[in-house]
Image (cartoon, rainbow over all chains, first blue to last red; front, side, top):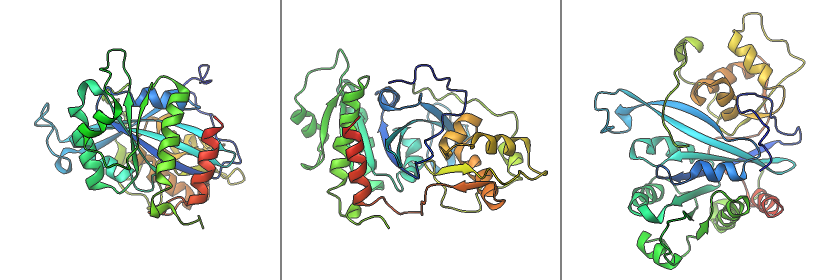
Length: 203
Length: 117
């Protein structure tokens, strides 16, 4: 990562003038699973954050704040200029139930999603995976973020526990490591290329 | 990290957009690329925030980046960007259409690019 000198409140980290197209990948997962870490590891800019207010009326009940009418959702994101004319944006969105409507909308037009998993809290992933399959048709790859105290389960056991389809890729990753994070993106895009919806050539 | 604290803006959102919640075009997404049209002066009636937005877009940025730098929600910035496209001050750099996915050729280029990182 070479963006250490940048100031995230200082605008001006423009894309190269040759960039004329953008694509996006979602990074979804439970709280604290390492979404922002992974985004920061591959992004050419320091991860940025936007916040959106959403009304709880349409997104269910926030158990912590039963009387709250609006809630806010933070989205951390970064970007990679992958070719001279294409920028890839990575949008990290929280996996909690009350944010599902938001990221189902965000999934529109996405190449796919990286679903980040912490094997110490595997049960946190079930809802996210269910909803991703139910609400979107986008390709996804499961990324097992390795924490120092993560149990060393074989990937096939994690696959079985998560009840993944045989074709769904599952990879281990150190979200802090750039090459490791880049590999997760390569895995996802390769997987997306097998989807009929991406077979046609761009007009 | 994943904190969800909210930094409220001193001006309520609907004031900034004259009460509108939706942009005049529905093809704007967080990743849509926008850029200022240098030759086009900003209208004298433009707000300070609109001037700031156009200034920010002297180079290409995604809508989400504009929102992050202005510390405003993406949905609100979409309304402002849409207006500024209507007045000719901004141009949409990426040719997104709603519900249109990138084709296989684009994915291949992305893969090539990622493998070179």
